[in-house]
Length: 257
Image 1 (cartoon, one colour):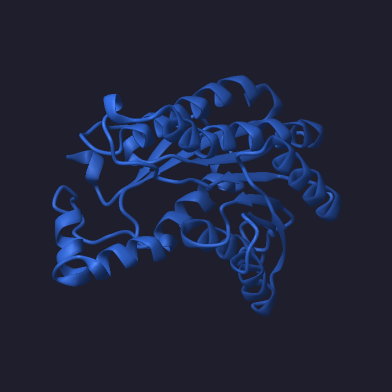
Image 2: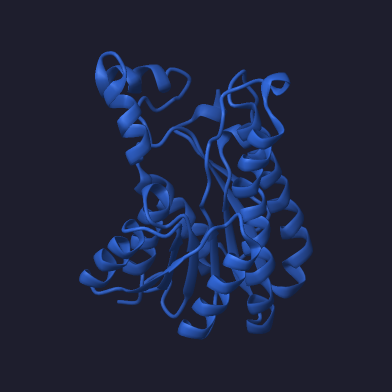
């Protein structure tokens, strides 16, 4: 039985943990060769080891998405290793400070945008030429429900994810002529290892945290990384061959209310 990504090569940033790792592992199960990229450390090789132990094909490259030189080197190495890059998943991101605009320092603003916005820009910039040469490709950017809606917390993160939402639409409009599709996913709260730690420290633990965080959702549970990964898989696959410029909420119905 053919996998849904048979014959594809996927370059995934932020692939060492959380939603990025779930996406990398799912893509490998669906027969893609996966370039696992993240900051240097043990988690990236551990992700590759899990993929290869399950019979998949993957290799890790340390990439700092805030550095264009690091991104360019990682893209070049992955393309040389696998012969192509058909899919780009821009997952790497940080949440930054929880401050309103008038309290945010320039350094805090720049640190967040260096990862969440410039990281998407750099990876797209360096992968797109490979996709043009190959006659097409698929890019999926990780934004957030906070890239669609405002509220009174984490202002720099909201603005950064709004930029990712707009870059998705702009690049979809620009690169369709090359058969390159560009879409974004917009999760609400997902039970990543980071969120698990926050939930464990919350009064009442995970059940109380989940009740509080899903009060505005239609589906009263937190997302799991695999819930998001399956949405990314659809957009990355040829099944979404006529889908571009879409900002897809994966949010338990948060944005429906």
